[in-house]
Image 1 (cartoon, rainbow over the protein chains, first blue to last red):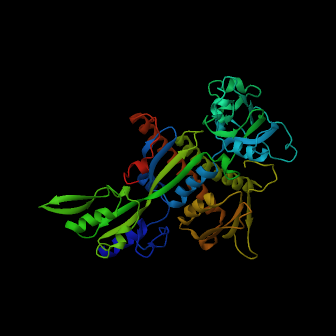
Image 2 (cartoon, helix red, strand yellow):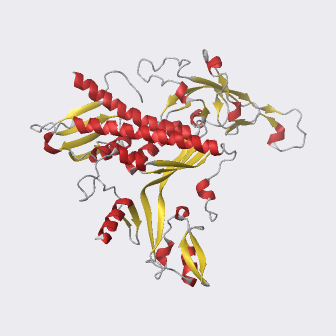
Image 3 (cartoon, each protein chain N blue to C red):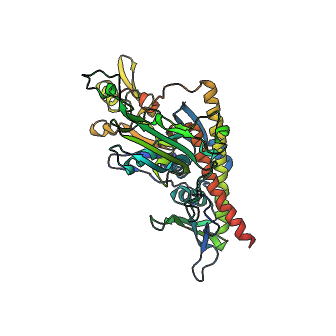
Length: 351
Length: 126
C-alpha cells in the first residue's frame, strides 16, 4: 500500500522528465480526482505551505523562489510582468526637421523603444477616445521631451585627420541628448527625480555636417500588450526546481561519468572506504539537459524530475522601476482584475 | 486599457435555452489566459463545481468565454464570485509574503552594485 501512495504523491507533486517524454505535466489535484485526498481550496493550508525566498536582488534584476502555488497563478504573475504592468514610453513624435539619413518613421520607432525613467504610478492613462485624439496632453498624462541637435565640422580638427570623432561635432546622437521639457507643474512635482532616458548611451542616429534633428516627443502611459516598448521588463521568467534522485549507489568510473552528465556542482564524489561514491549535492544548478539518457548503463540510475509547485523566478527590469517594485505591481494588477469582476457581479445583483 | 467609456461591457452571462442557472457561460471582456487560467484553477478547487473551463474566442477579440457548471443546479455566479474572492485573497497573501521577504533580503545586504546573473553565475560551465 505504501508503494501506491508514494506513486500517487509523485504524480501529484512532480513533473517527471523521462527518456521519451515528460510525464505528469498537468495539475491534477482537484476535488474528486484522488480518493483519500481533500483537494478543496483551503486558505489556511495555502498560507502554511506558501513561501517566497529572495535569492538575489539588486537595482536591475532579482531572483526569487515562489513555493507552494499552482502554475496557473505563477504564470499569471509572469504574464502580467511582461504585458500588463504600465510604464511611460514615447508614443508621439513631432518631427520639425530631420535631414539625417535615418527616415522619419525609422527614427520614430527607435525613439519609441528607449526606456524612459519616469514613475508610471504618478501618471494617468491618456484618453484614447475619438474626440480626444487631437487633444493636447496635460501634466497628469504626458511627458514632453525634446531632441534638438545639429552636426558641424570641428574647427579644431587637424587637417589630415580622417577620424569622424575628430572631424565632426555632434555626429553621434545619443539618448543623453534628449532633454526633458516639463509641462505645467511637473518641474516642481518631479523636482527630485529628473525624467529622461534610463541609459544615456543609446545611439539614436549618426549625422554629418549640416544634418540636423529637431524633434518633440510625447511620452504616455501604456501596457506591454499594446506595444512591447511599454513592457517594464527585459525578461521575466520562471523555471521549476529540478530534483535528481539516485535510485542505487553509483561508484568508481560510473560515478565519474554520472557526474559529468549533469551541470557542475550537481553531483559530488564522496570518498567511502577508498571508493568514489556519487551523491547529489545541489540539483538546483542542473539545466535538465538529460545527457544521462545517452548512457545506457546510467539512464535508470537517476530519476530526473521537477518540483511542480517550486518556481524559480528571474525578473530583469528595463531600468524604469526596481524589479521588486515590478513584482509588487504585477500582483496588484491581478488583484485589480479580480476586483473588477467582483464589482461587476455586485452591481448586476443590485439591478 | 483601463476604463474606456461607460458603455463597454465588462461581464456578460449567456445561458442556453432551458438550461438552469447552474450552467452559465460568462463572457469576460478584456481578459485572456492571465485571469482565465488562474480563475479556472481556483474555481476547479471548489467541490460544488462540476465543470469549469474557458476558451479564447478568437485571437483578435479580447474576451474569453468562461463556462461554469455547478453540481445540483446551484447558481453559477456563486462559485465565480467565490473564485474571484479567493484569488484576490491569494494575491494579497503572496503580496504580503513577497514584501516581507524582500525587506528582509535588503536588510541582510543592500542592493549590490553590478548586476549579477545569478542563474548563470551559479553554473561555471556557462
